[in-house]
Amino acid sequence: MRLTNKPMDNAPHNDEPLSFNLSGVWAGVKQSIPINIGVFTYGLVFGILARQAGLSLTESLLMSGLVFAGASQFTALGLWVAPLPVLTIILTTLLVNLRLLLMGAVLHPWFSRLNFFQRYVSLFFMTDESWALTMSQFAKGKRNAAFLLGSGLTVFVAWTSATGIGRTIGSVLQDPSRLGLDFAFTAVFIALLVGLWKGKADILPWIVAAIVALIAAQWLPGKWYILCGGLAGSLIGALRHAD
Image 1 (cartoon, rainbow, N blue to C red):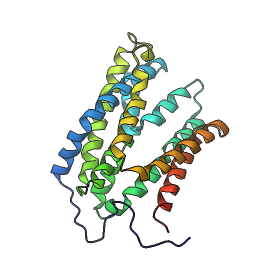
Image 2: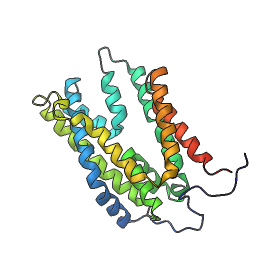
Image 3: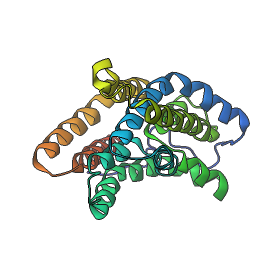
Image 4: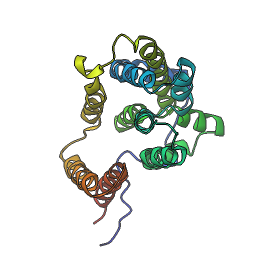
């Protein structure tokens, strides 16, 4: 197999203009509002579960504000028993968040051109939702890297505020599944997939990622299926650009 010099989809050229300003932040805020309805919903669920796990309001808000990673936070709550298995929680949440390495690698061609502050403040607020929306913008030819920051900030506000409200009302609404709130997480990611769809060429990487993730979920312990599925889909996507 011979690799060609054909650039990957949407990869920028070195001389391609790239901006980072308030208009990009504002665009990210506006584009994220529909998605954040779902983020707010499963943020409520997290707050309710945090109360049931014995976390105080302050502890719940600190986890959502400092960790700011919904999937790993839900995973940590599932392991939250006395005595607290600190090492298990750290290793498991690390595994869940390894997918962020793949997401960061995709952003590298653009964000390596930003200054230190712009790059790492934006990446702190990067979530699955803000990353997906940003990649959708790049796919449309828009090149304002501040979109990720605006989108991520909006997700941050929705997530942390919902955590606080969920933790407060947790004594009233103890079973989120009765109202279908547990499906919000899935619904958000289905919406993101629709937004990322670029055509039939996406079918194969998505199918491979799904199949590998399902197989890994059956045969591997913990959350390895997340990383396995992501790596498999990424590999197939990369091979599309090879002869």
